[in-house]
Length: 285
Image (cartoon, rainbow, N blue to C red):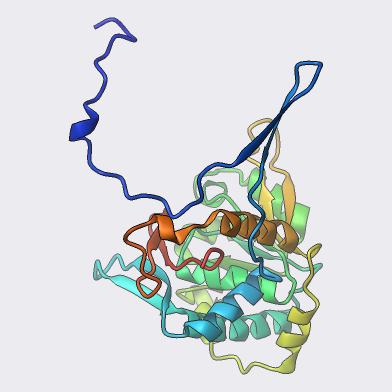
């Protein structure tokens, strides 16, 4: 068959799509004498939280028993979940522990492993005390032989804490960093490093709320590294203001009444990527 001559799909036989709970487009078009065309959407931004930790705190107060994050357990093939209430309590305890380890605005928390409930808790806990979270591409630690990109990322942000879900896949990468002087945390607590699970038992003090009160729009919430395809990865600071403005933009487009199946008591599941699943996501609901 000649390319471009494939028959069109019969739309009558396609599976139905659920209507989006989103406002219809409302665009202003301005044509300039020089031929330039400016398109501006008229929808105003919606409500926005003060910061990502404040958003979690608010939702925990509103829906403490509602599931926040879910992930598939590879051993049981069942979904493990954490509620907003338990998540917020755990985040505060971990934040307290991170403070005691010396993490803060100039001492980031570097994340070596991929998405998981533990990773989310570590990242939000770091943000709660103003310590930037710095997630690193997993292959830098697990597929590299010289670990040059990992070393570069480490030197670029100078973290105080390193987190990996399991020790074994990241042992060589951690060894390649040499005498890094960081506290290493793993979810399995292997090889005598700090266990993530013990952090959730840390007594919370007023230092956590005091640090959270200092968060503002220009506070760096995380460093996102570029791909490194044209050189070494570069850390891009992402502020609380930037993340919360994105939330406001999404909220401004919401129109739940357009979805006939919408039920505020039955929030949707939103898939981030395997094995990470959020229910009533932190940033949207």
